[in-house]
Each structure stands twice: as C-alpha cells, then as structure tokens.
Length: 143
Image (cartoon, rainbow, N blue to C red; front, top):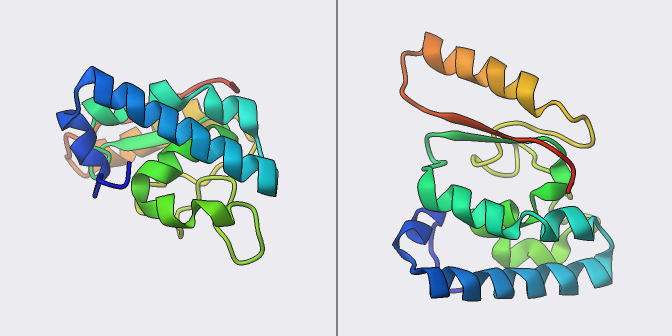
C-alpha cells in the first residue's frame, strides 16, 4: 500500500495485487477503529467496491458521492490520508466522513444524511452546465 502515490495507480494493479491491498486496508481500518472508534462494518463492506471504483474511474475529474460518510474509510486511505488515518476521529485528526476542505477527492460532504442520489444529480447537472465529460457516481446504501 505504501508504494501507491495516487489512486490512479490502482488501474495498473493486477487482481492479486488488489486483493493484497484490500487486506492491508482492512487491517489498517480494523487497527484504527479498535483504537479510535468509528464505523467498522460499513467501511469494511466497501473495501473491494472502493478499489473497483478507483480501478475504473478517474476521481481527479469524475465525482464520487457517498450515501453515508462512514462507508468512505477506504476512499480516505486511497486519497492521500493513509499516513494520517491513525488520527481518524481524534481532536485535530481527520474526520470520520468525507469533507471537502480535507481533500479534493471529497466532492460532497456527507454524514448520515443518505443524500447521494440527489447530491450526485446536482453535481451532474453542474458538470453538464460546465460542458465537461466528467462522470458522477453515487454509492447508495449503508453497509
């Protein structure tokens, strides 16, 4: 996992490498949540989904909208917060949810709102008005 410099590099990994990475991410999530608290099941439930999304889409341009923020721990780890993930949900640490001020990969700040479809639609309309070809993906559900 430490060899990854950007999420775009996931597109170059083989299936066995992605499986190994999924295991490393699960271990980091388990260790951190055991120490700091957090939402374990939803985040463990989206490890492979997040790796698959980042293997297909380019979220430097495309937009990823989470239904509830506690699904997004793998997303945080892949988008430049791996080295600070141990500070999850601590004073001065990274948040437990996507936060636009925290990363350019957090296209929508969400907590427990279950608003991914409406938020993604709004973002898509904005992208169309800007005449971009960026895609918008909504992850729906809680775990």
